[in-house]
Structures are given as C-alpha cells and as structure tokens.
Amino acid sequence: MAILRHPTSFQIAVIKAALFLLCLLPAVQLALGAYRDTLGANPVEAITHASGEWTLRFLLITLTVTPLRRATGLHWLLRLRRMLGLFAFAYGVAHLFTYLWLDQFFDWMAIALDILKRPFITVGFAALVLMLPLALTSNAFSIRRLGGRRWQSLHRSVYGIAILGVVHYWWLVKADVLAPAVYALLLAALLGVRAWWREQERRRQLAAALPARVPRGKVIPLVPK
Amino acid sequence: TALSPPAPSPLSTTEEKTSYKSVTTYNNFYEFGTDKADPAENAGKMALRPWTLRVEGLANKPRTFDIDELLRLVPLEERIYRLRCVEAWSMVIPWVGFPLAALLKQVEPQGSAKYVEFVSHYDPKIMTRRPVLEWPYAEGLRMDEALHPLTILAVGLYGEVLPNQNGAPLRLVVPWKYGFKSAKSIVAIRLVDKQPATAWNRAAPDEYGFYSNVNPEVSHPRWSQATERRIGEFRKRPTLMFNGYADQVARLYQGMDLQRNF
Image (cartoon, rainbow over all chains, first blue to last red; front, side):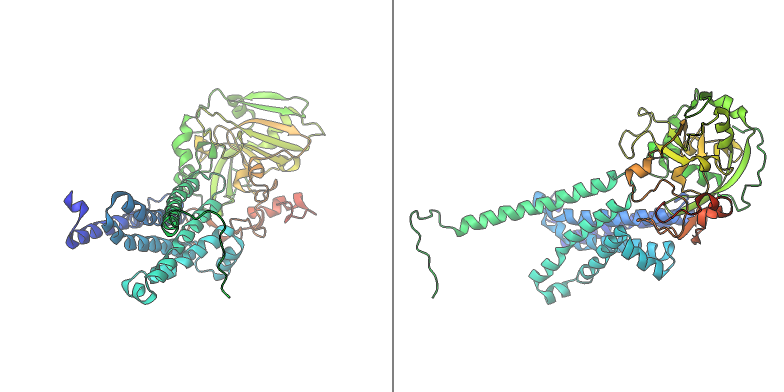
C-alpha cells in the first residue's frame, strides 16, 4: 500500500508504461479485427464508431484524474494525465483520418460540404481542431513558455471540447440517444463537481476576505476624488 | 428451411449479390436493438407460428390470412434487388416473394382506397420497450406504388425462409425507396383514403419524408445521398436515381417536386 501512497519515480515509470500498453489495446484490437476481417459487414463504419467512442472515453478518463486525485489523495495520479489526454487526441486523429480516408477517400469537396452542412460533423470537426493546440502544448517547455496560469486556462478548453464531442455523438444517432445520454451524464458529473469546487473556493475566499463582523449602521462611502 | 424453388424474374438485377452472412448479420430492426448486430442476436425470440396477416380497410373482401395459406396463394418468385439504406450503404439481395398487387387483388380494394398502411409486429415481452420509435412500426405507400410490379412481399432470401432478423415471416420490399420504407414482420395491411403516418416521419419529419425515394440529389441532414458504400466493397459508388429503377418508376412521380416530396 505504501507503493500506492508514495510510489518512487521508477514505480511511476512502470505504472505509466503499463498504462500506455493498456491504452493501446483498443487500437490493437481494431487493427487485428481489420486484418482478420472480423469487424462485421461494414468494417469502415466499425472503425469509425470505435475510434470515435474511444476518443470520448479517453476525454472522460482524462477529466476523471483530478476528481480521483482529490478524492483519494493520490497526487501522483496527475502524472498520468498528459498521456491519457494525448491518447484522447490520438484516437480523435484516427477517427478523423478514418473519415477523411476510408470513408471519403479525400474527396475534399464532399468533406467540405459535410463540415458545412451536417451539424454533427461541424461540431465533431471543431472539437478535433480545438484539441490540436492542447496536444501541441502538452510538454514542459510549453508550460514554461506560456506560464502556468495561461497554460492552465488554455487547457481548460478541454471542458468545451468534451461537450462538443458529446453533442457530436448525440446529433449523429438517428433515434436511440441512450449511449450519448450516458456520456452526457458522466460529463455533466465531471464538470459539475468542478463547478461545485469552484463555488466552495469562492465562498471560502469571501469569508476570509470579509471581516468577521460587518459594522452595522451607516456606511460612509469612500469615493476617490 | 429451403423454399420450393422460386421462379426467376426479369425484374432481377445481375449485379453481384451481397454475402448471405452480411445480409443476415447487418440489420436495422430497431425493435430488437439499434446496433446492426442486435437483430441477428435477439430476433430469434420472435415466434413465427401462428402468424396471421389482416388485410383490412377500404376493401370489398377484407380478410385475415394465415401465413401458411399466404405462402401457397401466389407462386413465389426470386427477385434480386438492390437495397439502399438511408445511412448510405447498400446491398444486393436475392429475395423470394410475390407481388403485393397479387395479395391486394384478393381483397378487392375500393376506389376510395388511395394509400396502403403497413403495421409491423410489436411484442414488448421480446422487443425493446424503450420508445426509440413509436411502436408498432408503421409504414405506408401510395396505392400506385403499392400496386407497382417491383413492390413485393418477401418471405425468403437466398432460396430459404426469411431469417427473423430480416423481417420474418413476411416483409415488404420496395427497391426504389430507402430501406426503412420496407416494413418488417408485418401483421396488418390497411387500405386507407388518407396518407398514413409513418414511424420515421413521426420521429423526425424534416429528415424522413413520406416518399423517401432514393435520390442522390436530395441530401439528408446526416448523410449526403450522392454516394453509397456497397457492403463488401471498399470504395464508395455513386447512388443512382430511384436506386437504379428510374426506368420503371419515374413516371409515378411525374410533375412532382421531389425536393419537397422527399
């Protein structure tokens, strides 16, 4: 249990390597399925759906790191977050390339029309484009260059990206919104807990800033001349 | 179970048939689940006997047919048709069946019958209870569409009795319309004077019109209909007007604005 509380750098490296392989599993499974022709009657559709779902799943998993860390006190979990986020991006890129290549065969006219005319593709495409700056700045150099505060506010855009991702899925389904509704609920919980923390923090700061006893009676306003 | 060898038809296409496996494992039959693999997994629960078909409404001789009686009523034909799904994939399926017109003739439709409504089987004990669509599934055709020689009631495919997931024991096949128009596991056919409400039109009227003719020029909010992926093929192919049946059916829609009547 001591390992779990305070793992050494080496132990974290081992955990990271194991997690890396685990995150690759869905991709390996898809590649094997394509090679063995076990993806069903419409393999392109199967790859498109699987890569899209894994993008969403990794986004949610990435957003779970902070709440999990706060709930358990296992602060080293934070050191896994960048990799999880980059896997979300990687599956997203795979999803986009499946569409561009296997589905549309780089028919740029058809692709442009899709992005402009089909709302679910518009938001999905936007989500992926917005992930690019986050992926590009997922390194220590960028944190130093941008400064912690700016880097953090940039990376908070992942909340909006995840919302776009769920909307993309919701608008794609023809009639049965059960699966996207599950993602929407999970995302609402993950974002809701953050909003709640924020509110708690605001109250704490207010309470600390205000004097314990507010003077009653007439308050003379101090207007600068 | 094999059906007695059906007669070939000049209305069949000579295109390469989609594999039996794909035809019977990649299905849209939402009563049994919305994943393409769900119907093959779940539709086995549907009991096919006894099964009756009510043909009712504006007819001189409305009556209920037993499915086994129906199978002997009209000689069975093989019809190899293209099937185009609204989701932009397509198949070529060797159906076994008979013209819907032959059945309608039996009940003598009245002059006031302008439309035909199809009602599918719905049993909440074995099918989804979630209101994915309004159950039972309903579809409809204009009378001239229903009487068109291409319109058949299918009872089999690949020379065998229809598998449950494909709409056993009796389903509609209208090859120039998107697949969802071809109602599965039909229990009632009604002759009516007004355009009947249909399941998908009720669910999303701006996406699924009453006619739903295959039309590469009318794009769907979710899918461009200009091209399609033939199951088993890698590259997409252009979609043909009326799914390639324009020579036979275009005259039914003469003078109609197909952008508006989509």
